[in-house]
Every structure is written in structure tokens, then in C-alpha cells.
Image (cartoon, rainbow, N blue to C red; front, side):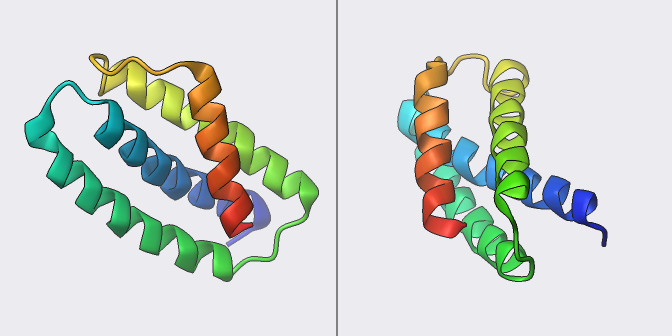
Length: 102
């Protein structure tokens, strides 16, 4: 895979990981929490494997950050419209998670 393809792939899996973590915490449907948490852990393992395969520079990290935030916002609007989370929380979660992985 090329660099841009790797960045999109990593961003997609990281977006899903962080999204499921956020939604499991802020959902209005407590019956979904268990499923969302299990998906979070599954995506977490996948994201770690993908990132370990690729060395990223600062430019790549910034691209990933922007893409991850966009993915999360779009999924919240389309799939989880009942979950209301501020952009500040999305950015903080993204930054915290990326700092641990990248």
C-alpha cells in the first residue's frame, strides 16, 4: 500500500475505535453499551496492528488526526444522531488516543 492509502486505512480504523469509545460513554441506549465496548476493544487491537506496520512523520500524524475527527463527526451525524458530543470532546479523545499510539 502507498502512504496515502495507509493513512486513510489507519484513520478509518482509529476513527471507528474512538467513535465506539465515545458512543459507549454518551449513548442514550444503555442496552447498547456492552456491544459498543466490545467493538471498541476489537477496533483498538486492529488499529494497533495497522500503526505498528507504518512509521509516520509529523505530516502523516496531522493528516490522520484531521481525517479521524472528520470520520467521527460524520458517523455521529449519520449513524448515531441521538448521541450529542461537543467537538472539543472529539478532539480531546482523538489527541489522547493518538498520543498513546503514535
